[in-house]
Image (cartoon, rainbow, N blue to C red; front, side):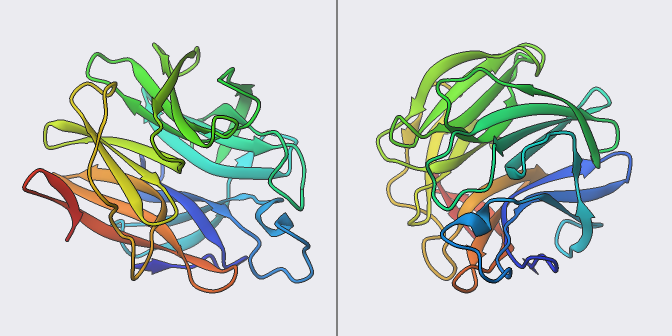
Length: 270
């Protein structure tokens, strides 16, 4: 699988979810403006809508358009989407402008939807700082929810927060932090919780029994050919499918998929 956004050619930060209203797999992603000429600095990764692609099988994808999101800010990054009790929930990184550098504040905003295309009722989460990005949300075995995210002032470490209902959140501090990284993604598979973090040299892998205490696996996965960035793992029919983006040029990118395997207690790619 290789998906390229046909509008801006810069898909990044994918997340894949089953859309029960459309009865199809939907992939949400940051639509970086990779093919727009004349944009100074890193303004091409600002002013970014959230792209949507659709698939019948999770492997062959067709561009659907952009999500309709009720926020006034122009820069939207790293959508995280879950469906719970007949309602879609998005946790979205929002940047208040288009900037040529990485220094602006950013926040994580919660929105809801009845169809996963139109998103309303934005509410900013009160987390560890005014510069937080890259939400991942997972329901724990006791029915509560945990959110992991990247706190930039801490040196880009992974922090977390807890919620009973996806709406009210209590920040819990740092989750892992022996190395900077971003785009944490947590999933449960084969009796353990797993976390993958983009450390810009492949994906760091952590394992936990309780989603609180994490042990890092040596090395990284998907370090070369291609090098994976900001991944999302979909556990489906016993399989763990890792969706990630990788550069294809100076600014352009594509989304790929790899199947995960567990060998001698280590997470690997098939």
